[in-house]
Length: 198
Ligand SMILES: [Zn+2]
Image: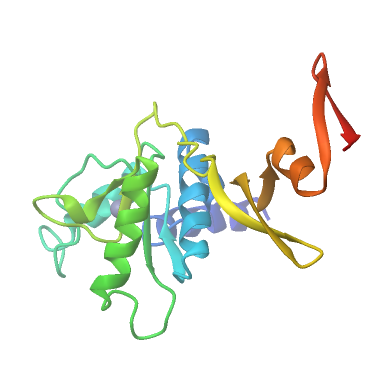
């Protein structure tokens, strides 16, 4: 029994370098937040993103580096020092069979989202790596969705212009605008809003 367990572990260890880890939770906490924010924005824009690799062990990085150099195959990486080994990078493809890497517009759109979020896209590099995205440890989520914007609200068939903030799928509408639209005056008692029918 002990023998077969040992052998099993050995087989698994040898197999690890050939297998990509796709688990977002194996990234550092900051990269997890960045990756999830990225996926959320891609989903909003209807981009079918599939994560193909996240954390990469140094053994696997070395294994990939050897490809096309000391081992047969096409060169797939330029470095033995990857942000993947530091748990700060992830790779994607288009989740459409046969078009995984063929759609340049898809990667450009993902790259634009990354830029907005302060995430580095490998597609902008001198030697482009379009499926690759990475962050540094001081990455912070931009609260770009928390922008006050004018929008319309219809009450009993009548249109009103109100100011709102859209955050995580919820509308936060300025209480003064809502009150005005439904015929109330707004005053305040400390931080409590007081609405009185006009
Ligand atoms: Zn990568």
